[in-house]
Figure 1 (cartoon, rainbow, N blue to C red):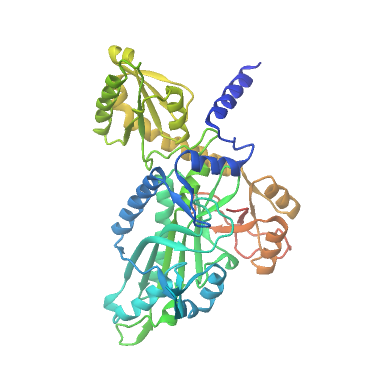
Figure 2 (cartoon, rainbow, N blue to C red):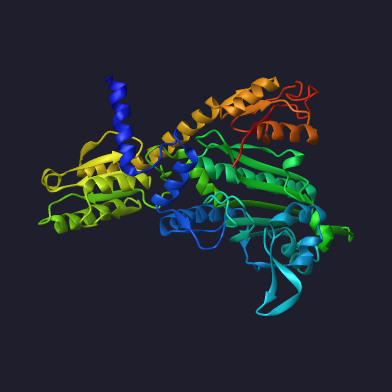
Length: 497
């Protein structure tokens, strides 16, 4: 057997120990198994809904804290609105009701009493927020309204996939109102850029910023912008959106004010959101055949300490592990000591690799006597034996180095799996092979629909001129119908989650 063959066999054997289907064998099974076996989430007795377990909840809480700090730094305030929305609110904005009608959950009874008007369980909150704003807003002096809400929303989902497609999911929804179109548009771009920076700097996720085509816009928006990430099966995941709503909702709900010139004007509004789908993006962008790879800046546990000992000294080694953990916590790290008794070391190693903890430290009696520890980073097969003081002092930098490795790995993958094409046969072939395609398009909705019907690929977005990836300008003919391109640049197409 060759050296490479031996390494592959070792990895295959290791993967079998985890009981996780390799990504290459069945990416869907791999995902579902990782979500469950890494203790992120489980199915619930409520059809289409999930139960998020403590490890997954801790991850979401870290995401919440990071984003919430960013929102507050830009002047936004949190508030809370009811889950139930009067049905007539949804009906007031024509495009909105048309876009959401098939997904709505309704409440028509309280006990045995039938309500004169049913409530809708919020699919999003533009309508009820608009209603309240109308009572709060009087003058230009009151603006801008810079609001955000953390909560859950409800949309009927036929295909359940934890974090990606569930009938109830968790998110934040920002809603702002402004005195001018320019100010509202600046807000839309600012928040999309915040999402992009958070994905890049905290989650190690490369994403493409751009505008959605008219067919892919949010119901009721004049413009929708998104960040799109590539998963390791080549599919796209819309990871955050920001919408310029113009005066559509303010007109429907009477959100108006007196201008400086004492004229009556409707407010210019925005909405923007990032949901628990981002956990799916973390799993599918960074994971490997052995499970998760947690981005270290958001990982619930950054370092796990595994005491290694016999029955007669295991308790002592757990105590020593806690002392080591205290030294690491003093460096600002999130540390867990695995003091489980009656569980083999091999099981513990596999368990924490499956959960994606960035660094593992093994500490045994001989290590203690020699003043060393054994260190293994999640992305490496190699173990290192280091002086204890050196390992502790350098651990924060070691953990953080995984962030850059993950980001560079995902960026290379996205660029290598994206093809630039100018004819439809090449388009279809690349989509079928699991790539994104960059192609010119005419912007005709019927043509876009035809592409989707033939290939199951949708227009992900039209990248900004200053997007980190795939920003360019150019002219050409539509890849499908041959008409002149409408965007002055190539559009990204791909199959999506």
